[in-house]
Length: 111
Image (cartoon, rainbow, N blue to C red; front, top):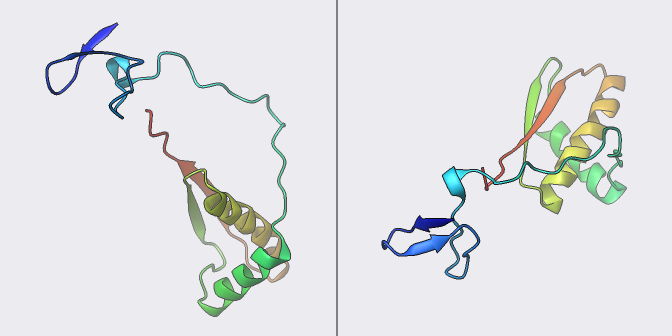
């Protein structure tokens, strides 16, 4: 498949030599692979991560009873650690009488 780039030159969907890959019709040619359900496992964050997280959330009163949070993920270690810390905090906060909901969202840069 040949496409025209900004300079008017022909480019193929797999031509990424200039650092810019062009996707046909702006979409992936094949569907994204998926994992079988129930294969992902939640891992509680280490104390080195979770303790400062609790201290910051408490000090700045970040999460209150009835709140709804949206955790934005890049897929890197820091955002995934935040996701796991929020999930663990949900259990911790419930014992403190704080109930909240949260969700996670990420943006696929190829879509």
